[in-house]
Image 1 (cartoon, rainbow over the protein chains, first blue to last red):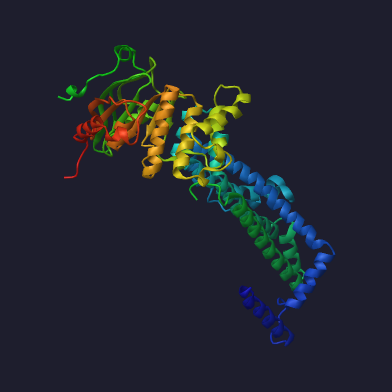
Image 2 (image 1 turned 30 degrees about the vertical axis):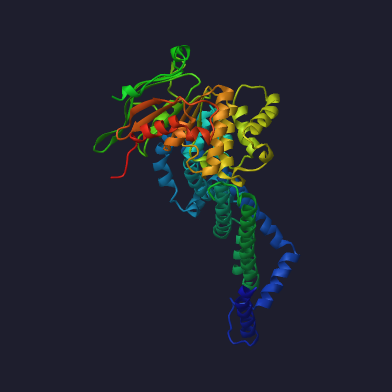
Length: 246
Length: 272
């Protein structure tokens, strides 16, 4: 609770400065105005609609990207040949900033969900790929030897030994990807796509509604925080005592 | 002079049976930047069906490597290993390995029963028999009450018992144990020694048991192989003629036990 003292004080100070008309600005709004604008946007449904669009883009992109990343990572990690062959390609494509793909995605998908989802998926794929590949490589040698000793088939080895061992890491990859997915989804909306929270933020700014703009900003921050906290809790609960090494 | 140690006291028909496992001039070397490093050099050994063979040696003498070769986990760079008449080139359910580090060899996300079950489902036995088999095996190693617990909730001795139970589920012809009790306290260790001894005679399995403890080697073994290091080779093979079942008190006080211990002590490296 003590952590709230400073923000509360800052908000009160901001409100006081605004009420006293010490600073005049078109781009500043008082916290009370922001709260009122948020209430209005929530009531007329525009904020919830935009939230739904952003979350849909982020979530679908995250799932697609993670699925591709985890599959490729598992493959590259299990087969040393695939791992060696893929190294250069991965190092070449990974540093491309995901938002640099906006022009291409716009050409391919046009405006709409396809564009946002594809860019989010690209961004989320890499952490999933790298984390999975590393985790698969680090499955204890003893476990792999136990699997050989039991004469487990390839599929059996994957589903009974490798995947259970890397599940906690996969969840870490998913948590990391979730944060990235929200950032990228909003960025695409701000820069190009007429959808979701990012677009609403830009519209509010361009139509000179600073209070609404700040309301969206605070709302996006809140969503990011809830997302991360929720996933952290889930991870602690499900995988806190999963691995023997931890 | 080392050959003088070999005095086969067994019944002739036992000694005359073909060996279940034979190592013929087995060597293993690994490439290094500065040439090749010999880990094992010219190891020849016949293991008899049903015998309990202890291998002792100081650390780094290649005894674990030898066990891995027999298990099929590594492949020798020279010589030949034959098991039941066929060359060994991969692991097999017939030669179960009990790893030294039980914390890494058990599946932490499976219960005690689940760990044993994995060994059964990957085999050929009909699924409807699995439950009864798991119960029998867990009773054999004294883990029946812990069937639903996870490995991390068990003591070290219990985890090692679980590893043994999982190996027994394979119904192996041969049990390969790599310093299985090295990390356990003295009391747990003695109990497990007696249990393994009992299991071996009940099932008729051949056991190769690696240890750095001379007394453990003599107490358990029908024969003891002493190894010396760098490169690893066999320095002595000693037949142990002590009555079974063995007893932690009387066997260890037996005059012959002390003689064997004395004899083998010569082959272990000492600090200079």
